[in-house]
Length: 214
Ligand SMILES: C[S@@+](CC[C@H](N)C(=O)[O-])C[C@H]1O[C@@H](n2cnc3c(N)ncnc32)[C@H](O)[C@@H]1O
Image 1 (cartoon, rainbow, N blue to C red):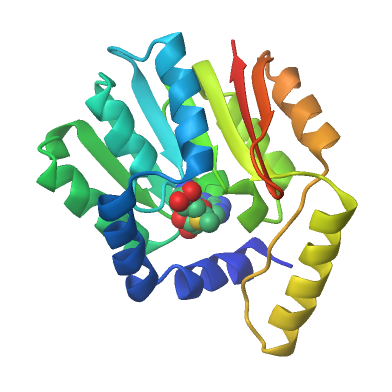
Image 2: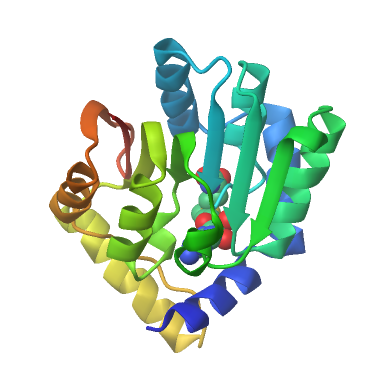
């Protein structure tokens, strides 16, 4: 599957309706449980005064939470215009719009224009993209201190769910596909960028949370 086709699929799946309901859910309930684990670990390591690059930030939960914990500036790169608008409006509501930047498009293509940051996060993002090596390499090399990842556990049942789900999406001609990338390959690519694993938690039946440090 080409990246163009997948990016078109991402715009369709993460549309205005999804962005609106996700933002309402975030305002009501706060970040997802897996996101909270990542945030807790980063806060424990110390984020005051650091910069954040949040790739595929959705409604911006990580950005809003880490700014509240002392992060001084944020950059959000997302393939969904609707999610970027939701993240931007929440940043304005919280009073930090002037410290936030937004880029629309495929991060792997935009990477040469995106500066390194102290913290780089990808929360449930690499599972939305076929070119995992490109995504991991370009994002990990931009992490000056911490690199946070949330992505599916690499098990027989997540791979089976992936195959069944994608067969169904093909059947209904949906351009969006989901990817369970091999965890050993993801880890090797991250470590090759000079980062060391500091935290790993199988946070649920489906998701794992990892933090690497330079
Ligand atoms: C499942 S959503 C997760 C959103 C948010 N991080 C969260 O956990 O709630 C996946 C996000 O990744 C973005 N995404 C996927 N591939 C991308 C790419 N190549 N470049 C930029 N954004 C991408 C999607 O547009 C979407 O915002």
